[in-house]
Amino acid sequence: MDLSTPTILVADPNRRFLEKSEAILREEGFHMIAACDGLTARASIQQRDLSGVLTNVDLHELSGWDLCRFIKEEHDPDLPVILMSSEGPDVMRVAESVGADN
Image (cartoon, rainbow, N blue to C red; front, side, top):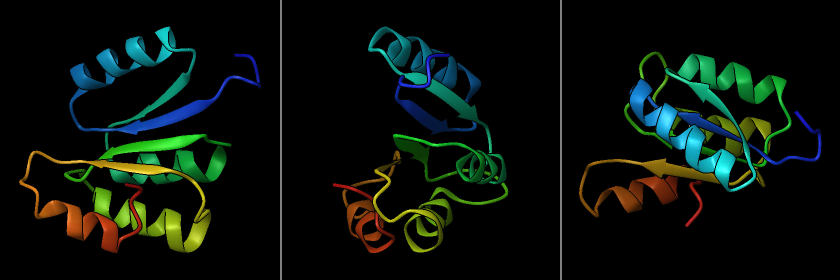
C-alpha cells in the first residue's frame, strides 16, 4: 500500500457490506480497513493513521455511537466520522450529539 493513499476504516457486522465497500473505495482510490465489531474498530483507529471512519451504529462489543464518542473525545476530534443506521431521521440528533460529521 502506498503511504499517500487515504485510508478509510469501515466498521459493520455484515461481511458482504464490507466486501462491497472495499471494492467501491478501492475503485475511488482509497485503501480500506475492515472491522466487524466495535473493539476491533477501536484498535484499528488507535494503530493507524486514518482519513475517515464509516461505521454502523449497531456493532457488537462497542456500539458505533460509543466508537464515535471515543474518536471525538479521546482520539482525534478532527477525524471525519459517518454513522450508518437503518433507523429513521431521529437518529441524526443522536449522531450529532456524539460528534458524527454531517
